[in-house]
Length: 136
Figure 1 (cartoon, one colour):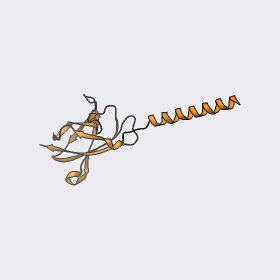
Figure 2 (figure 1 turned 45 degrees about the vertical axis):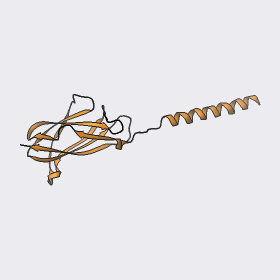
Figure 3 (figure 1 turned 120 degrees about the vertical axis):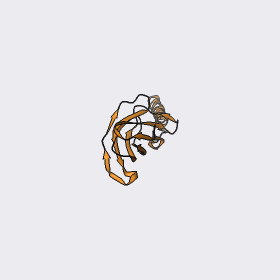
Figure 4 (figure 1 turned 90 degrees about the vertical axis):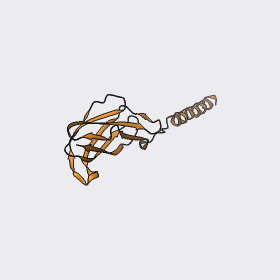
C-alpha cells in the first residue's frame, strides 16, 4: 500500500515539474517585433554602392545580431519600374545588428530594398520593404 502511495506522489510531483517547465519556456516575442531600418536614406548612383540596414527589436529598441538574411531584392518599384531590378550582394557588417549590401544603382530615383531574414530563437520570417533614393 505504501508503494502505490509513493508512486502517486512521485507522479504528481513530476507532473507539477513538467507544468512549471512548460510555463517558464513560453516565448513572449513575436516575429512582428522586429524591423529593418535604413542607416542612410540616400545613395549616389553608380556601381558598388553600399547600403547599410539595422535589424531592430521593437520590444527593446536595440539592434539584433546574428540574423540570417536569405532573401534580398533591389528594384525600382516605387517609381513604377518593378522590372528594373539590380543585383545585390551581402557583405560583412561592421557593427552588431548592422547588415551591409553592395549594389549598382544604374539610374537616379527611388529603389525598393526587400529583405527576408530569420532571427535566432524565433519562428517565422522578418520581411521588410525599404525605400532608398539614388541621386546623381
